[in-house]
Amino acid sequence: MKAPILKASEWEQVEAHLATMKRPAHYRLLVLLVRKLGLRPKELAALDRSWFRSDELRIPIGYSKRGSGRSLPVDNEILTALEDHMGDRTGLVFVNRMGLGFTPGLLSESVRRLFREAGVQGSAYSGRRGMATRLVDEGANILVVQKALGHKHASTTMSYVEVTDSMLRRALFA
Image (cartoon, rainbow, N blue to C red; front, side, top):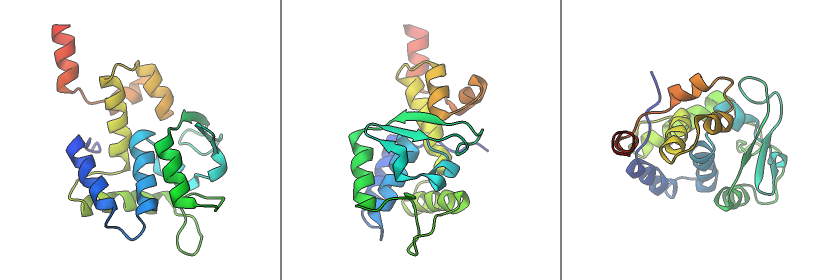
C-alpha cells in the first residue's frame, strides 16, 4: 500500500502539533527533511551534521537505498531547524537521550506516531510521495524529481507521483 500524500491542511495539523511535543526542534527538523527533501528513514538514521555544507546536503556513497550518494540543496528553514535542534553538537543529527543513533525503523515509527498524534494518517514516505507530487505539479521534469529522490529509474519516481486536479486541469485546458 502506498503512503498517503498529505494535504496542506494536514501538514498544518502536523506543524501545530510539533509545538506540543517534548522535543519540538527534533521533530520539526525531522518533518522538514521528510517533507522538503524526501529523505528516506535510512538516510535520516545515518544523517551527520558534517553532510551539511552551506546550502547543500551531501549524502555520501553507501548511505542511500541503492548505495549511491546524492546532493540536495537546502534552504534557510532547514538550516535554522538544524541549528535549533543540534546547537553546537556534531555527529549524528538524530540521537536518543543517551546520544545513540536511531535505527531507520525507529525513525520511521517516530514519524508515523507524530502524524497519528496530530490526527493525520501518514509516514515518512508520505513526505517523499508528497514532495514528488508537488514538484511535478509545479512543473518540474520527472528526471529532476528522480534525481532529488535518488531513484535509479524514472519509472520508480513516476510511481510516487499522484495526479492532482491542477495537473489534470492544465493538461486538459492548456
